[in-house]
Length: 423
Image 1 (spheres, one colour):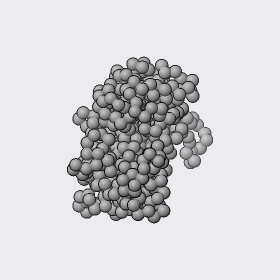
Image 2: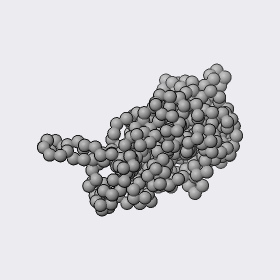
Image 3: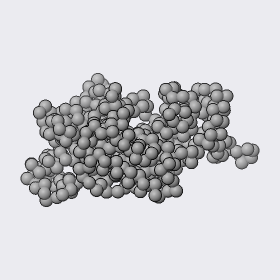
Image 4: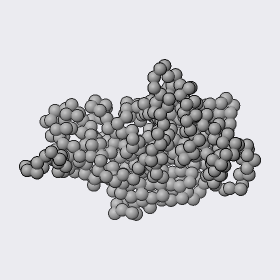
């Protein structure tokens, strides 16, 4: 039987428990040794040199030399480690290493259909400011999208003593098909144009390094850096909001595909010549599960006039209330969407065999989408071969989750540039 758990995830952490992927020894060999040590210290929060050497299987001498460099450069500092209960109060207190929070700062921006959000993090991953502003223009042009990004960033910065020039990097996320490597956006439902160079334009506007990715990857990064999946090597995040997205982690690393356009589960086909998707094609999973798909079904099957409510979320709330009250037509709409979601999730399991599937996003408030019969159907459609199906968790993050993931993207880039010396 599929295991499902609903978790209220706290995205408002401001403690020093560490942040970043908790990789086992050897899993970060793709990074320079100096950066491996720094990231291990940040992930631990506070850790002794001897533990770093033991856990990473490197010589104590190398750890001492490289951490001395990092201390001199201001990236880490020494701190008194908390004593264990069994320790006596005599003698010199144990010394631990921790990241210097003021070594740098990053920002994360998330643009969406309803509102734009931004957060500011220090180099230890602590959130020091946040902002949410309503979206002012529904069908935005490319230039208006750049304007909106700068606006919400400046609103967040205004809550701090920082200036734009104090930011090491800015991460930006938006829905659609995003080329992380080139910074070009082939298509986004938020923007009227196609193939626009969003990263270059925002970088020119604010004068700071910029990284860009799609919103599903941002949720995945947030889980890797701050959430329940920090120690997992392989997991999947499926987001259901105004669209359907997916992020995939393999061997502790986010997978984007050969051209940076992979894992677009929302645009996998579940019905030939099926319903029209907002991407322009037919039969996409998103066209049966996303909010606009549910509104379209309600307008048709229940004979609801779309003009009676200007906001889709109002119709969705009404649809959900009708379903909970026993309206068979409303229940059938959610049931149909749940079956298509089960098909999409089963395909993910058959392709990648993840240890965990995280379902995230605003639509996860509608429990019909992850009812037991939906997850049982997912299990029935997978090639189990006698093995236990993956655990499924429903994560109800706060509104700033997406921006937090964008900040993780920026922190990842800023760390590599600062610690490894790469431009």
